[in-house]
Image 1: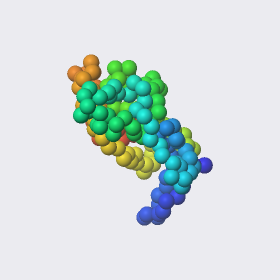
Image 2 (image 1 turned 90 degrees about the vertical axis):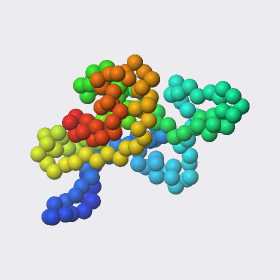
Image 3 (image 1 turned 135 degrees about the vertical axis):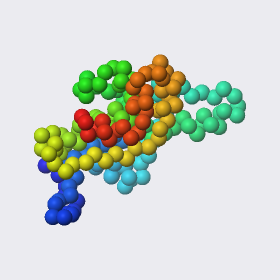
Length: 167
């Protein structure tokens, strides 16, 4: 049913009731990640077309270009169904892709848990998010959304777990 008992504390079971992930190259299942890890596979690839336009402008830039043109990229990070989460197009455009993917993964995890919103609303349930890299704040500065009312919440990492909890 998607529920794993992790332990017990104070007479109450501590469970992990759902899991979802966004991993490089579209790998999303725990089994596939374990297989990749066991076989020593590499999930790095070229920068996806349109992700950013990095080209060397001089000979000294060419070494930097060789080092940053590869990475472990999440596929379809630019796609998001904002209507599903009652988020306006303007707010969605000003949101860090990490927040958008967290909402989608949170939705998947809820459904994988076999639990519903009603059950969770009166339970001792928490949302825990491991998130890093605040570079979207720099990215948004060079867009039309820089002065948007949504630019602060869209690029602040502490907002991410609250978005999931609210949704």
